[in-house]
Image (cartoon, rainbow, N blue to C red; front, top):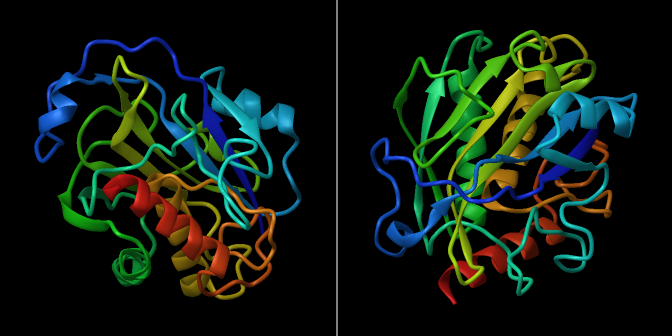
Length: 257
C-alpha cells in the first residue's frame, strides 16, 4: 500500500461562514475561513502518477508524493502546512474535535474500526476526536467551520478516489491578518471500493487507514521513514512509530505553547 500526501495552496480568505454548531470561539471569531481543504491521500500500489493526482484533486491542491510541506517538521515527520513563521497549523490546545459520520456505503463492522482508530489517535496526541452523531452531509471537499465529516464514497462522487486511492483526509484552516492560523473543520473520506478487495486483513488495514487520515486532519504530513505509520509506503505498520509520536507531540506543543 502506498500513501500520497498533498497540501493546498491557500487562496485569498473569504468571509467566515456561520458555525454549524460546536465550532471554535474566542480568537477564531476574528479569523477568516480559508476555502481549500488541505488534504492527504492514502493509496494502494501501484503508485499514482503525480500528474494524475493533480488532475484528480484539482487546482486547489498541490500534490507532493512523499511529504507534507517540504522542509517542515523534524526527524521522521512533516507538517501538512505551516504559517509564514514556519509554525504548524493545527487545532486549539487540547481541543475536542467533533466528528460527524455519514454511514452510507460503510462496510460491516465499521463502528469498531472507528472506535479503535479514534482511541489510538486520542491516546497519542493532545487532541480528542469525538463522534457527535450521524449526518446525511456528503460535501467532503468544500468544508467550512464545523464538525469533521467522515464517510465513504466512490470515484464517481469523489474523483480523487479513482484508481488505487483508498482515502483522503485533511483540515480547513482559519487564517488571521497576522499570519497565524488554526484548524476549524475538515474531512476524512474513504474509498468504498477498496477495503475487502485488495486487503489481506480488512479490519486492521481499515483501522490503519482511518488513523493515518485522522493524523492528517491534526496537521501531520508524510514521513520518509518507512517504519512510521505516516510513511509514504505502507509496509504492514500496525502502530504509531517514534516519528509519528514526535510529530504529534510537536503539534501539541505548538497548540498549547
